[in-house]
Image (cartoon, rainbow, N blue to C red; front, side, top):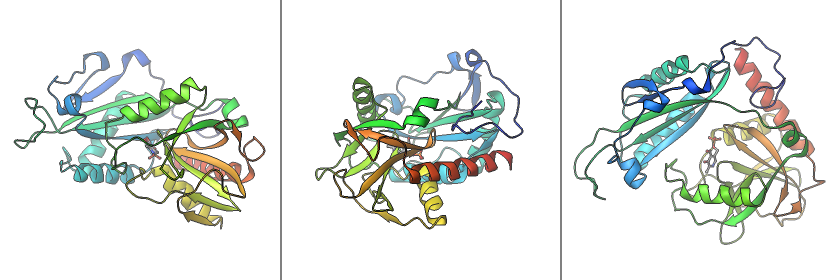
Length: 304
Ligand SMILES: Cc1ncc(COP(=O)(O)O)c(C=O)c1O
């Protein structure tokens, strides 16, 4: 049996099972059955996508990297001149309370903060009370096939906005990118800049092994600073794998492996991009090694 990130379940486990039909959501101060949780139609999140969000993994009842997630949430809020609805420690406590009502063995919590409700007008005419919505879902495990064969992707020209470092709820470009991936029967779309550099995926950060070095786009306005990206880089550095944060292209000489990271999948090797085979078309040694080390860390965290 495997758990969310695909490692074997070896450790003590919490035994809760949750009926998906009886999920509880959090909306602006209330815990409600998911079906009864509602937002005003003049919420600026609905009208303008005027809001930000976070997705946090929970392993065996413990939230992974909750502080960096809340720090990134704060960065996103500050960047759009919006206040967090509550201080970080209060948010942490609400997250825990919601999880207790949806106690999946492995879960992901989705939290969305919008600027609040006001008559529809682009300008922000008065201070508003932000809306906070949170839901919990079971964290799915990647398929055995994906783990054995690696994931696949296409590349598409980046047509998103210029502040991808903000985790904005305006996800239409990502929806379109993911749909394009689905239409091609692949797992992800990677955004390309005008010079054909791979920036990131619709919901992943992307890496290559080039001449033995782990390469990924540097943190700037064109990518989201993924929490798992950070873990991948830390893990590589701790293994003395050279790391370079620089723009890179798929046609670089000595490119032998690709991989992508996200909170929901940790690290997955990517073996086909645009019908091009990467390396030998199977998960390569560095991706496998990094993934194994990361799963060990996650398992240790689960059991800590
Ligand atoms: C555009 C984008 N890049 C990267 C990521 C990966 O970030 P994280 O590792 O924090 O899940 C996400 C996650 O949703 C994303 O939407």
